[in-house]
Length: 427
Image: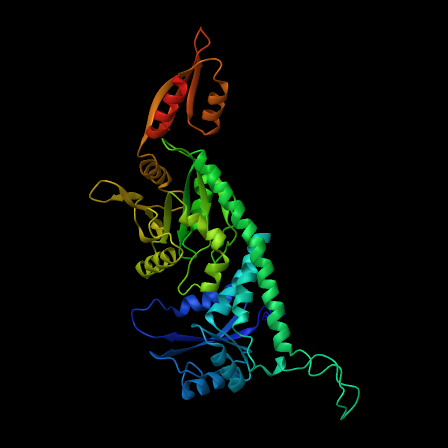
């Protein structure tokens, strides 16, 4: 076992580090993360520090203060709101005699609790293993045990077993093997997703992906749009596993809507790598619905943080529509804001109350159906295969048959595909 999860309800002392006034660094968010991990926050200590101490992140005086408070509140766990190096973690644990959890470790705990599908669990385990691999160092005394035989007897120069394999080396080898095996399994998932996307592109089915800061209401909005029943809860990272559903959009026809994991400040890179197959839905989308909690005081910083992660995974060029959710909490009437060219750029909605959904749907139609036209084409009775393909792609609005048996199809179709279709009919 390379990582041992703290028991549910473990008392935790929170250490909130603020490096500058403008940074999105909320003590309340840290508390939400700790509660989401199933832990019990009993106290929080604040520290202002621009330059981390190389050995313990905080200075000697602050570390002593943390230790005293931990004893007073009987906290078995110290949770830092920053990432600590393996050396810093070990030094703090040795000094305070308590287990230490950094921000990355804390978020990994939440992901481990939230993953439901086999794929989600594999992705979380891969992230945990990669994180654990940075913690396997010779300084860990419990890894210095020796394996292997001892010799024939004391003082014998003909020992058979020698020193054996160090526990550290065995752990490194086992961990590497497990990472390789999970990576191969997820590689198959990645391949399957790529094949599905290629099939959708061949059918000219467009895709829309939801993205946003965690707890912005993405899953609630997803449920409203597709009338699904995706798990929704007022907590961070309530849903992890990707969900895809078909959605009918006026003019644009059938599109595929995907819900993805929520982002957060300093989302661990190990998680971004592990969830690459899931997050690739964002990079290949025709449109990203960037869901924003309109009631969040730091909503602009959250928008910037989400855009930073989108850039990290290569989705910065995908067109976005900002969806300001929870507009009822800020007394905003559902509305659309446009740029100088008249394109929708922001929509104010309340997914929970179901307000603004028609406005949002109309905006999707505008953005996804720029080259869509409505027309009527006539097929001969022997062109049944072509008729079936048009029905399958969701482009047929209405069908009639005349007395001669000819099929008249009223279509909603992209102009480029209409030109191709006309050519195939004529030939």
